Image (cartoon, rainbow, N blue to C red; front, side):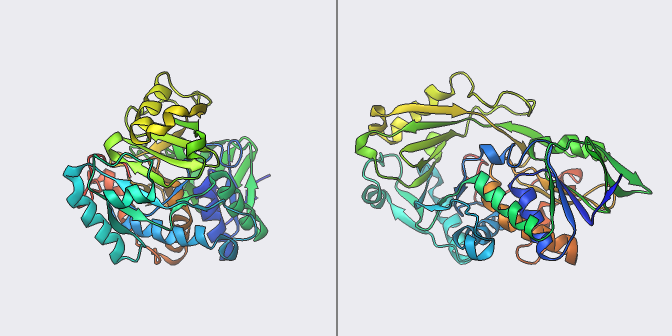
Length: 389
């Protein structure tokens, strides 16, 4: 028996949950179809950073809008917490990229983000245990920190369900039904679902869903490992969240642990159903070495655990958002490992685009997936040594 909805979302991560939340708030009858369980893909493996420092203004605006949701979660979403924890955030870059740092910080200030340039001496006062001899200036966001990705997705999905949305777990989409060039619904392991609009929010599996609709978009996969290290007694207090470009890593606190991720050496286009319960060989040694370069006291710490994860990635490492292919088929994917922190705003803007004909809160139309068909890539005016954001 076919179940009929106004709109179907494929994927139950933070972005699928956010879109369902915003659509259901406007009375749309929506169903979220998830092949496993909520936040079982990239969201469940996200490092959860909540900061606004981007080098592309549209993404910075999405991060700034989303931050205000994380900050005021109970009032905006509901009683289920998102786990937002304020730690302060430091963006470190190599000396040769200080002009880009200044330009990006000024852009962030112009759009309203609470951020400032601080000297290496200021950083030493903020976090005396950090090595600061390889940079002169840093960007500091005193209000930023991290949130719990699984709690965030679960909270938004629960709020959406309270407004009438349907969430279907263990529901593998096996086909997308088309008629006369437009979407009619999907076939799944739990039977057919009918709707005139289907949104692909399937993360690392997004390209497979695109293929079911006859859409060819250059969506790949990105493997990302993280490590949790126990801090020694000298570092028992929480520390700032840090993106450390000189060492190609980032780290943040989580209770008495420190989470560490590396930017380099992350394989592309692996099977997203590969082993994510364990980090790849050699990752932990590299992560420990780099963490101890920035925080020498961590030599007295220990390894708690490590795991991997997969996300979808695009050629320019910016999202693929908007309609493409048959009428009624939309993409909400390709976040390239940096999508969690912008998920509240992306869901809002996508709902505006779908229902009102244009995104209003932030103009996300520059992320149209048709840019790849046209051979165009998004490039910031002031990039660092890596496109990673």
